[in-house]
Image (cartoon, rainbow, N blue to C red):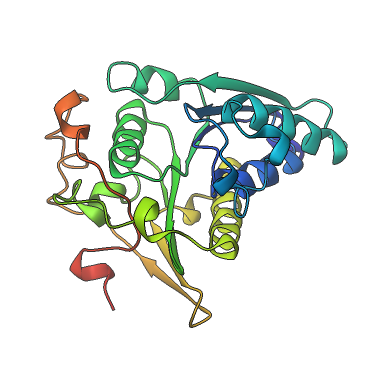
Length: 254
């Protein structure tokens, strides 16, 4: 994977999913990684967010994660890897320009607005994106290449109304985010290496059953992003709270 030295990735979210995904990208030798997160480390994070220790509690996740990923890359012999920290969150007025500076975006946030904003910004900027979500004992991964495969809106349609029923209230199991984060990294490395077949495939994992389902998802004709109806990022679109746990559209359901 020597070609990875010339590649770059933006890691949106350095939590339960970003920890394993980021570690594996750094150890694979991806040349430039930027970690974006506006949160601080809490003790409750430690059971699943493996980039941190008790000594990091109260500190910036972006800064701590970047330092840890530098160490991971160097431990694997990749002294060329540059890891940057971005303390903040993805915002509608700057998201498209931010993601445009990378070869790929890896998104592992815990809320609907950030997931949809990331997906939409990547589509408008023409940047491949690998997204994932997990709650309790289930998780999913979707890789997208703008104009060539389904995007997040083709699968989930839009931010759902109603109260948050996901990560913050239901919790998530450490091994689940470990599996999903690793699968997310594998998908990202395939796309960075030129394997476009990794995109447009939804992986759905159920830990209690020990099952991993793979579903090819074509672009949806009704998707406002893929059919060209959405041409900009309006702040009002990304206001609702919530977490994503599993696909809701009929063609992704069992």
